[in-house]
Image (cartoon, rainbow, N blue to C red; front, side, top):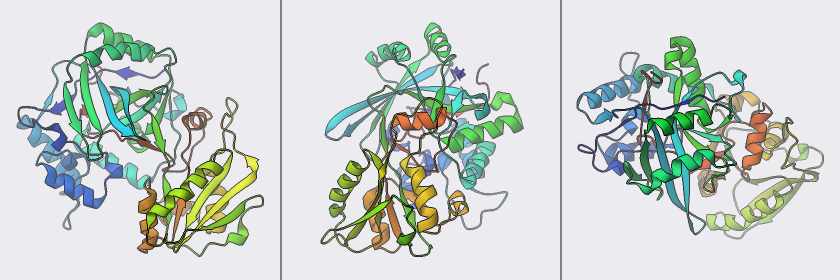
Length: 430
């Protein structure tokens, strides 16, 4: 079903960039303006100049961050800062990080994934997308015809067939290694033996794949293929087995601004609201920890949300009479916390219109609860909404049933870096 192909990776030349750590960055959608400037200062060849270039005051149609990205790419290719590998192949990436006091490793296969419409049923999404983000990624792809960061894709491997083909490569020396500011180490190996490459491609011909992260880039790739031809219809993807013990999903909290005051009297029937006061919360975000434990406990069986609007009080809103179905029947669309929040609470209680979400107005997002608390304290938003994370079963059930979660419903951590290996669209599959 899924068309997973080898490619000639474009990588930093270790002779000119010996410290790959200085050259990588996070993907575009999690980089703040302050972080963008930090990566610019980090190294003159940092991939930020390609992945998320600066916007300048005098930018216009002929000169902008997309044309500058193309100029950097062409210059770095000419100077051999970036060099294509000699032969097509797959790449194996191992991400190592600390999680809740233990060392965790996640294994990913980096490949060129053929970008086909969702209607074909081979690549399944689970989230809605934002037009502005897709427009941005399209302009970059149009200018550079290169993917600088991979999308994150999941697949089922219950018998460990794909993993068994990949694990022997971990015994050899890594092709490259880089670490992030968050303490994640990424190691890269080449998988280019023709027999192994062919076997891995075959293993995916009868598998569905699920987009975990990168819906905007995937849909951009589909549009690009439709407008410029199927030879450009690929997207750089890191594929991770759903059985991998290193898969971690974090919640994405909501920051609400420029809205009417909440009308708690309009809570739908069945929902209950409880207030919790924590002395010193207005000054100390550490007080959040106890409330988030309450939220997690409430969320084990019911739809549950946390609200903070300043001061020392937090609100827990939950529905004790309606049990959340964690194991939906095949083909049915599970109702998830984030969906209930958007459809049943944000609209009536906060008078939020769906278009305000779809166009990025009135709602911002963060995975960091302390950042959400700070946004309220500093007056950058009116209300922080805290969520529990969805499970992998829920995410794949939504995708399999043809459903969509609201934008920014999941946060797979750690993020896949930009710049570890890149995909030039020309020549894939040839």
